[in-house]
Length: 332
Image (cartoon, rainbow, N blue to C red; front, side, top):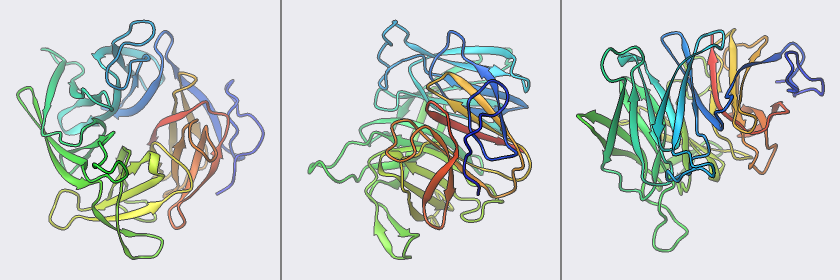
């Protein structure tokens, strides 16, 4: 994979990309700030803006207590928006039910919302959790075979303060106004180290993003990926939530947030949380390229769009010039 060059791309953005790739601004937040997650539902694009709300739902310095979910047309026109109390830190499309699911407050005081655009009745439904036992909040959301999986973020350490054994990932079911969480992976579960093929006991201190790996990926096709951002580790779950579940550990050379795998020709959307922009990248993508966002607080190559080598766990810069890349979305 070529590295990012030094020439800014077109469209007014100073994003440096390899030859043949261009970047354009898809949308800006305007008065909204802190975009994080991005998803697509029924042809439109959804972006969650956190508006400075704290990780446990604390008001922002300006007094904001709600995040804003914005629906955009494919051309980037704002179509609708919904204010959800708390800090949205996980958001995904539940395509089977034509709705968006969002979690709020990743460090604690967490809850869950569904938003059903165009519904004739109430479009927003709020759910209180039951079954959270890890001591923190909830984060990213993925759907596998109709089942919802939610990251268990900010887990409490064990009594020694250095090891973690609480749930790292839940399967969540919705009924009435209750979101019931059932653990499917623990912070100290056993995994196979991809580097040497040997079993290893995990010690996940920062379960964060998750996503489903498409069939076109060079490895782990169909797996559910859980990223432990602060640990610079990714866990690839095969057959999640079943008796045949297995986990593979990939150690990275830096902290990363979202991951996206290309499935062929298409466009890659990058949410920049520091500049309040959504950038769309076009170019000669091919199936199986793996991109990951490297936020500005990462120790290696901060503020870049990374190119991930799954065989080595090495993340090298593909795109430079971002403030702090967050959510990624590839559309074929």
